[in-house]
Length: 118
Image (cartoon, rainbow, N blue to C red; front, top):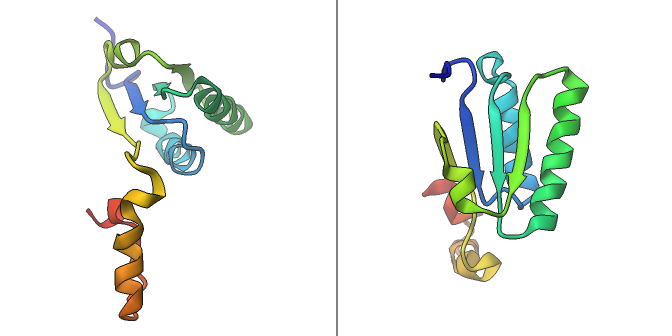
């Protein structure tokens, strides 16, 4: 049985969104204990998840981190043997949370997006 503590498989579902998943991956790699991790990036859009995976590999190489980064569009494959699963997708796009921002703004409150405050 593999040593999960040394080489956890961390799956990120919805990893095709460049800004949040890429920054999350950078945050994960900033922890020395996770530098031997296997990151599995999954998204329904193969072009987008491939782009994030390539940028993440470049980031890992730049810092000399031994992080394995794979990408897939197959959810079952991504979840297989995962030790940790992080969900990062948003259903409905900007339209789904537009009111969460616009209504508070009318009353002088500069609200962050709903997924950030729960």
